Length: 191
Length: 239
Image (cartoon, rainbow over all chains, first blue to last red; front, side, top):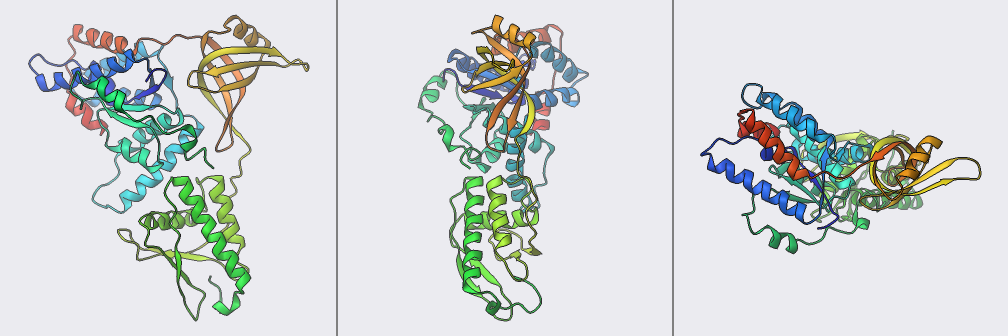
């Protein structure tokens, strides 16, 4: 995995930093698994990328729970993001997000019972950025929409669920993962 | 094909061949854009009393492809790739009498789409639109050309190299950072499928931070400040 890019979703950042109450073992376990996932990737030499829309989602955390808790979390995180690799949505990524959403919205039109959610657009932007950066993975705790968006354009980017794998088994799974498709397999570049 | 009194007899076989060929090319372009296998439909019916051709395929990808075809006509190919726009422009030109109208009916799990008359695709032919972005990479070359312009070559962290024109002061800074990793503000060109470097606006030395350690550090600070947080509510809000 050395030299590869991993795009980090908002859910992972929140899971990593959220204070967990003593005795809350279920949430503690999810946090530990996420931490182990990122640590293992880090040991394997990946580069982490924080998409700019993640910053947007973190900034609106203030409504997420507790008195000013989200606001303080955002403040503490933003102080550390200065040196990190934060990637904005540039023109190619914006166009790719549009292609993903066109497909998603078509599916939604066919299922009137599932109205569009705001998060869909943000997730599409994150997925599009991962695709344009030719990232190996998006690491997330909320895989549902990412898979749809990436499938819509046959993207080779993998979705890695940070909370699913039992600790201690991660390296084995990493090594068994098929490599992403070659660059030439990208839809946008085959035209 | 719609228009007052148009019947199949008004369309000679050469025009019909071009119409079908252009339709097939448009479907190919759409399939390639979406990465789906192309479904090649057959001509199911040519109705008398009008010039209606019904296309149908049993291929599993046909439903999506037919919907995309309708979307492309409805939006005049706005947002589609140049190849799709070119293919639909050819299709639009292929009709010599009347106009093309399309509808989508009988597609499994999809609502019927009403008949709409096709207009020419909007002209979005690209002239390498420029955009600003942040570029992470190494300085691998600094040159002054014979015409006096300064060029800096950057090797992207994730592969690929680009040449950027820049001001003398920034070229000098780039020379000092030769073979170092930098974070640069650049302008890139984009023609819809390929990027190319245009201008280097600024650059500074950059080293990749320890991402995991930074987050753990943030967690410790939050714990020290006694912050409590409804994790599930926050995650649900993101879903």
